[in-house]
Image 1 (cartoon, one colour):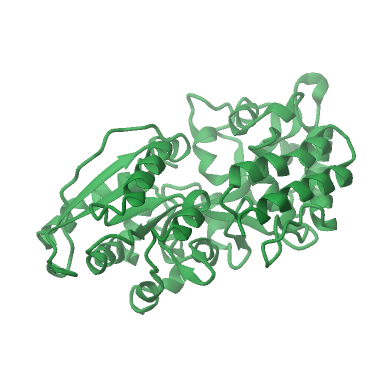
Image 2 (tube, helix red, strand yellow):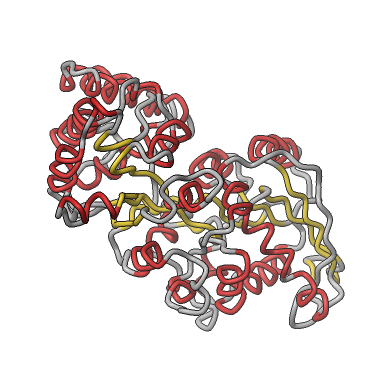
Length: 432
């Protein structure tokens, strides 16, 4: 079972004071650009990965005298702290763990990130290819690697196995089967609904992404141009809206993940689609009425197959202003090697990015078997982003959520998508 404490940290990261932990690097004391390295400083989110790092501290410390200072913050405080330090070109930060989709474009444009391509590709034994393809995709811009992914998250189907079994319905393998099952189990007169998902304008965009991909579309084309009004995107938006309009709870257009997941956890919906990091919500006996009946399925196939987001909530990069970049890489390489990554998965239930760790039966013993099976079989189907790929991502989500709200309300989606696409393109153009 997922560590509820760890998963809560990943989803609702509280602000905490700086945490200083004495660590050490393996393989002797590395040299700095201007001499011997005696310490490194890491700034990171207060996340499951950061918690797991503590369990490796004593081993790391035993192998060298290099001290590692870890400063852990809540996400917003983390971003503010990093921007202040990096904007000042401070060299007192060597490594930082950051949210790829929120800040990587801004940080790389400002020259704050070290190009790590040669580092990750130079050590065959460390094995960059062992990281999931979507995770490797997520930490790159224009072919340049800006970090090592240390946490992942996927779009999955949560469903009531007892209800499907009683109705003789197999877990849906296609989106059409999902719609048919939601219709068959929908019972609004008795306060029970076929499906619950995010329907609020901004929160829904990340979940809409997998539908758009599986219909053959994306938010942008290969050149970065807006494609919200493509036939594939329109069809996906209409499908998403119809699910909630026809088989979802009342007020769906005002629901984020907290409200939608609560409906499923209370036993009032047959299906819930969202991130696999929410599994703890339904496996916590103190908060869930579906502990014994919740099951997990891969995101269903659409016309273009099962194409779902497989994102990186946290990656570890090196500051462009650090004077100890080689030493910083030695630490990152050590903490993300196969042995330590597998230990992170097993001991701290960190949803890691290395495929070999997920293939280890002992390491995955604490995870729900259904989720492990999904993650083991991602292959090339995961997509490394769940939102538009530009710096002004919050503004983009506000725009793109508009047509989805129109769909939920039964309006003219094609017209709304055309209007949204124009506004989105203007936003994209403003960054060129």
